[in-house]
Image (cartoon, rainbow, N blue to C red; front, side, top):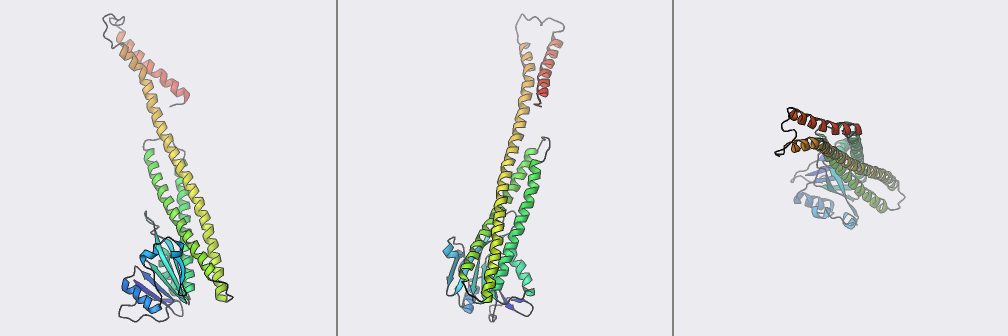
Length: 325
């Protein structure tokens, strides 16, 4: 899908040109979302730049993600997408700054792009650099919201793990749900941190490539990049703090599961010990010897039953006194 944004008095106007339509003049932002080969060729011809393929966008080397070619700056970053689902993804997005134009190439739809595109008609943006800064700010703000949500979920999970409650049947099932939630939250946090590190590399590249020009636009660019860089670093520190907390909570949950299992094993062991003396008494009086003193005794049967009951009650009272039950 090809969307071209051109500046108007109040903001940017989005145009979706058909194949037979002429390419809009003086675009500020050209957005390619899952583009076809024809759309890529059309943009390359209209703007006079070469665009990377999807395979090239997946390269992990810094030299393949951040470079300058023919006066255009190519920057590929990973942006978190589908963060509201149980399967968040990191999607590669390429930003191409060529003069006063910005070209974005993406094969997914991260939420910051939708949010920024909805605000674009109300923003007085006149250059691709301004659009680029706005997109980066939207991506960083979205990462901050995700980390805030992770922190809230960790607080809820922490209260669930450390809640003081008596052992109950089905507690292991609750801990299983908590483990799954910790895993999903930890995965989301790690992906958000990876996206922030990618954005940090893009900002460092922008800061280095902006040069030392004395123009006001260049000065504003360096100032904006510096502010976003500080934001990214603070968010990365917070993501690392959340990662440590997730690791601690995971260890605590596994420890609680071990305690639950030990309690269950202890109960079975105590029950086995309680029934051991009655079993011994029953085994003794179940022997088939010809001469047994209690065999012809009228109270032999009640005596054996009473002896079994007493031998079961005594270990029970002992364990109760020791606090093992």
